[in-house]
Image 1: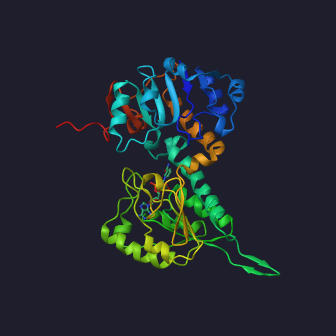
Image 2: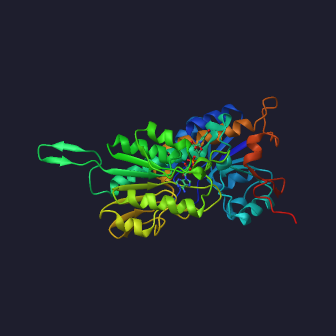
Image 3: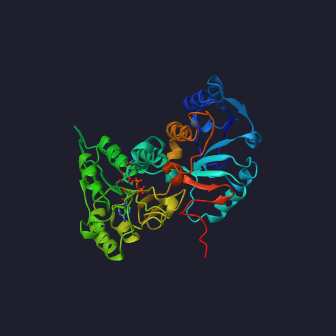
Length: 377
Ligand code: NAD
């Protein structure tokens, strides 16, 4: 059976879905591995590195005979039309609100797995692409912020005077936010953070940051069984906004990371709040691809809002592709390994497996995921 490693079509996507380590392991499992020429280029993995571990370099046309296609982003219509019927496709599928794309994959009879729907259970930790990518995106957000910031991050006492430490406020203390806190602390900033999930309070404190939140009854019940945040009521949002407005005026850098699965990102920072910040302050909005946490953020641009630089870089994980690709590739490999039968040493989908149930979007010509299947009347 053949695994195909696609070169990403999106020009803004530098990541790749395999590494020399995973190609070696895939060949060890008995797969023929074909890597589309140049697939690893932006992740600093030359084709020769894949060849050294038993991979074969091919072209886009080779996907037609592949049993498994590994990708970073959901395949386009054009790509899908070249896949073999029955092929397994692993990618970040971005399924919410993309019914047409799912229908297309079903029609092409591919078994499409959305890696971002992997349940957050111990068994699947090593397959969790949201965590592996958000972790490095959180780090990168602080690096981008420090780059846009005209001042120093740490306090510096010199013979010529003292430079104060930057004040950094992280909104949303999930995987990305916690890494942003840790990174800003390493750079010497004075860090505070907020979230709506009570579990985050202790995690923020353990990283040496101050926790700021409206801790009412709704806050105490804001975490879903899956570990994600609920969408908060208007009343809560108003209380949160009042608290944030007061705090944000004193901050130099704000990093926002707040997301709610399947919903637009919550709006946490208003234009009015931005205008209360000192000129030269920096806001990095990691939620920009889901509509943004910050009013006025523009995807792919740094805009000036009343003297504040609002950075709207999409796909921060892709900006450090040489690091994130290695983790992403490992996530995909670990999951793919579970789709191979130990007895027959060949692909065998177990539709009863909870990991398969949670991530399989389309199979056997239909959209099969309960969250996305067309509702029958
Ligand atoms: P996410 O990317 O969905 O959201 C980022 C953060 O934004 C979350 O912490 C969320 O609570 C917060 N948020 C949402 N609405 C907000 C609002 N209105 N105001 C402020 N903050 C808001 O979350 P994530 O980073 O994927 O993490 C979700 C949870 O899953 C965390 O508890 C994390 O520790 C947990 N997790 C568990 C495992 C595991 O057990 N295997 C793996 C990874 C993550």
